[in-house]
Length: 107
Length: 118
Image (tube, rainbow over all chains, first blue to last red; front, side, top):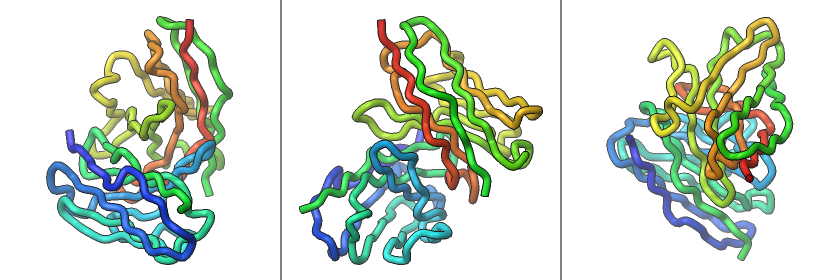
């Protein structure tokens, strides 16, 4: 199975900050990496697919980069509604696997 | 835009079975690939399985193989997830999700809470 490791597991930031979340795969997954935002009591929301493609309707302050084994989610200009947990997911092969999550909290 | 509506919360005893439904809008069930993802309390997201065109059928997570079954009823546009021999660690929020862009999940159900308790 492909293991996905996210870092950090949590971070505290202020509104307006630029933050980055890292995701590393245990083997090359090309660009088959997706990012989700998950808020308590709600379904996860797809933000980025294929490593860097912005899902329709997602604000442009979200961006993704990377290929192979190392990937990054960047939020440029954190907004109050962005405080949530973020997960990466590899879709290179089954079993599909998620990272452990990064909780973004208010500083 | 396709939407999913899942069945309500369930409380089950250990060893019992649970069947969660996910109704698909717009008569699109035959055109889409649906997967199931769960989240146990305080834990991350876990993929359980789903229809995978690359495999030509349903693929299950190996740790659930034999206890989980995913089926569909095209006459009612509903997919089902059944989990047998429930254990306390199966207590979780269960989501159905639509696969797009090669298994990125772009549409999700609202979730069904399953609690396994004696």
